[in-house]
Length: 94
Image (cartoon, rainbow, N blue to C red; front, side, top):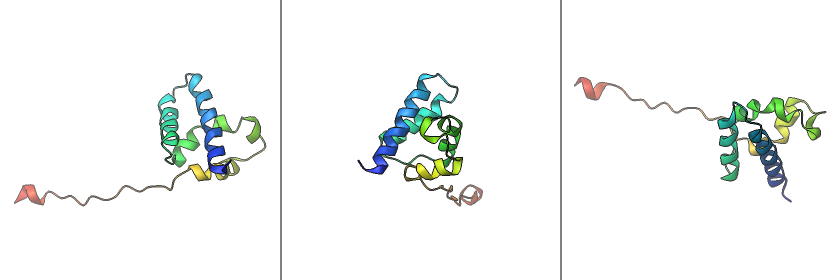
């Protein structure tokens, strides 16, 4: 199996477990599940928000946070900057 799909499936399993625990961050987990099911990337902020849970899982106990992020890096998209729109009030002030 492709390592991308293996890590994606592994993360989805963990996310479903966390979702069943009725945490306050349910909407973040749902957003991550939706992104992964649509074959989209998740953000660095999203992975950081569940990091405290992931680092307690058996395969990751001996890994640092940096190593865990590196492990899931194929699933994490690049940081996106908000584009400056450049709108002004000129059209209203004429």
